[in-house]
Amino acid sequence: MTNTNKILTALATGVVIGGVLGVLFAPDKGENTRQKIADGSKKLSDSLKEKMNEGKNKLAGMRNSFRERVDGMKDKVEEFSS
Image (cartoon, rainbow, N blue to C red; front, side, top):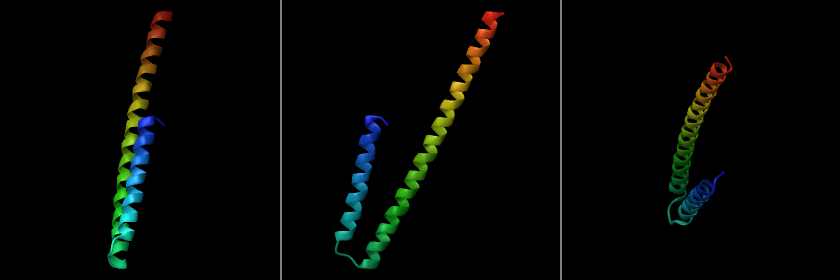
């Protein structure tokens, strides 16, 4: 994991923890507080799913690019050895 990813992960974690603590200590009814936490959890879950899908798509693209390069190298080696 790169330093940038570590910093972003730490920042996101801090934001989530701060948000949860802020909601828990805010003067509001328990029902409203639980709803806010549930809504925040849903948003976080959706965001993580979206990031995972983006990562999967990026990896698939990199894999395809790598395969194309390897195939191109194979063709050049075969052409050179003939």
